[in-house]
Length: 449
Ligand code: FCB
Image 1 (cartoon, rainbow, N blue to C red):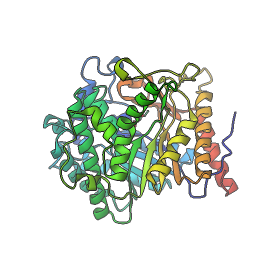
Image 2: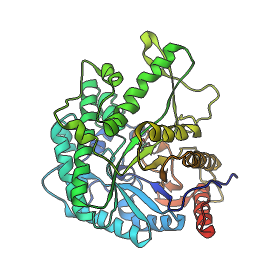
Image 3: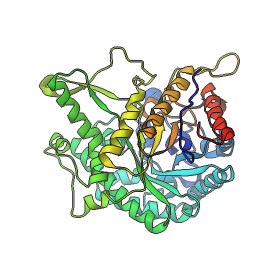
C-alpha cells in the first residue's frame, strides 16, 4: 500500500470532519426543535429507503467513545457542526440550555483529548419554524442566524478558537431551494438565488458577531469547489463549462472575496435576482482569517440542446460509490486557483474523502484499499500545492464515521470508522489505521512527513 510521504509544514493541521444532522441522532432529546431535514426525510421518496437522521450514529450519546477513537486516531482537530434547532428550538428567542450543554461537553472532551475543536455554525439543519416563516429566501432568517451565532459564541467562545459560519452555501441554497434535491425541497430559481444571498449575508453578519463576541478567534467560511472541465475543446462545451463554473463556484467566491456577484451567474438566473440592499456586499466580503474548501472531484460538462450545460461521465474515469470521478488533480487545481484568483491568506481543506462499498468481513475488519489510495493521492495533491506556494494550513478527512449521507441515506459510507447501524458498533477501517500511522510517523520523526 502506498504511504503518503509528502512534505507538510510543521503546524499543519490533520483532522477529520462530521456534521450534526449526519451523526448526532437524538432528534427529540433535550428539547431539540424540528429541523428542515427532519421534515424532508418524512416526505415519501425524498430520501433513499425512507432513511432519516433520527438515530444516525447516536453521536449525541456516544460522543465520549468517539472522542476516544479520535484520540487513538491521533488527529489534531475535529470539525463538527452545531445544530441550530438544539440551541434555539424555534430558531430565535428561547434558548435551550440543554442543547448548549451538549456542545459544551463535547468541546471539553475534545480539549481534554488534546484535539482542537473546529466548529461550523450551519451545516444545513435550519429550524423548521424558520422555514415555515419563509426560510432562507427571507432576510429575517439571516437576522435570526446572528442571534443564534451570538448565543453559541457567548457559550463556547472561551474554548473554541476556530469558527466557520456556513458549510457549502451552494448546497443549502441551490440544492435546497432551486433543485429541490435537499431540504426543504423547494424548486424555484428565485428562491434559490434569494436563499444564496441571505445565506451569504448571514455569513458576513456572523463574522462581525464572532469578531465582537470572541475576539482573537479565527473565522472563516466553508465553500465547496469542484473544477468544471469541458468534455471537449468545442467552443460550445467551453462556454457551457464557464456558465456552470459561474453559478456553482464563482457566485460564492466572488461574493466573499470581491464583494460582487459575477455577471455570468446573474444572467443565468434572470429575471430572478438576488435581493441586494445597500451595504450587503460589503458585509458579505468582510475579511476572513481563512477559507475552508470542500472538494471531492471535478465536473465534466458539455453543451446540450440550446447550449444548456449537461454533466457527463469521463469515459475512462474511476468512480467512487457516489459516482464521483477520482481526480486528485482537481484538489490541486482548486487550491492553486483560490490562491491565485482570490488571494486567500489561509486555506483549509475542510472536507475530502470517498464512499466505497465497504463491508465487514469474517475477520471482523473492513478493508478499504480504495479509500487509502484516494486519501493518499489527495494528500499528495495538497502537498504539491503547498510546494507551489499555496498557504494550505490543514486537511480534514470526510468523514470520521460512516453517517447519514443526505438524500442517499445510509447507503454511502464515507467513514474512516465503519458504523454497524443496528448495534451502533464502531469498527475502524484499514484507512483509519493508515491515517493513524501517517500521523504517528509524523510525530515520531518530529519533522514533516
Ligand atoms: C459535502 C457535505 C458533507 C457530506 C459530503 C459527502 O457536500 O458538506 O456533509 O455529505 O459532501
